[in-house]
Length: 348
Image (cartoon, rainbow, N blue to C red; front, side, top):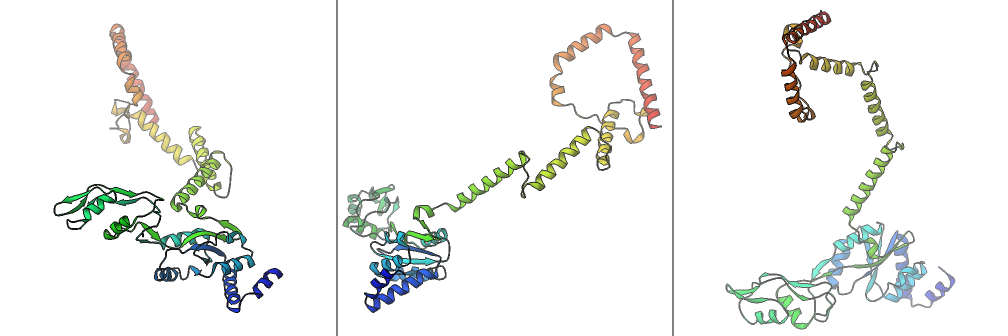
């Protein structure tokens, strides 16, 4: 505390010096300190909110002049500008984002009174009001609700906006809303600003969609990982993926080039076996094949082969009709015999 601050404090009455000292101790004991608005909160609800924050945050209400003195003595001048109206100090060891979320969650619906400003559009919803026919239908209509008597009760025929954000609540509207038990405002501790690690946070900075933020971070991490892998830029997170990718590409190259490597031999043998079976399936003479290769079906033709049939096949058929002779037939028989002898020699 500076010498000037000490002199100012010494001039205070004893109870005020004690109060400032307790506020300063509160500020020193916690990592984050902020200002909360408490206007319009009934005493009982305020006590309930303070109890609800037990273990998370501490709320201390005092005179504004004493709060200002304690903040100035602690070097938190940035918060002094927010000490205006009905406010209190809030202190926590949680980060400011968690504090803001806790305070927002502690807010509860409350009725709005005559003369207050609407915090948002006030809407009387469509449906049965549960009120028996009587003068109340006129009160509804007078505040702008589309209401009428129907089926023995007063009905609101459509959602009716009876007051827009920022407009003042009239006595008639306050009575109607109270009769319908509509509570259009929220009552709670309104965080105005908080300082953590020397950084000042406004509510706008803290009001974030946590799920959307988490999704954005995950998407950015995934894109960074893909970039690292595609650019072959090794990092601690992508080295294993790059090694696995390189291993797969090396294996593919080895199989394509038929490199007789010990690790590739099982795959090369399987590839050769598949090729042999495909070839054997094309031979009509089963006696020319060993027993294990008999009764194999030819693999289905590729889509491109089927599409290329049509006109070319017709032309081939015409050419064959024009050129086929008995000698050609004999040649075909000779060819089949040679194929059988060749496969017989191959398989013993």
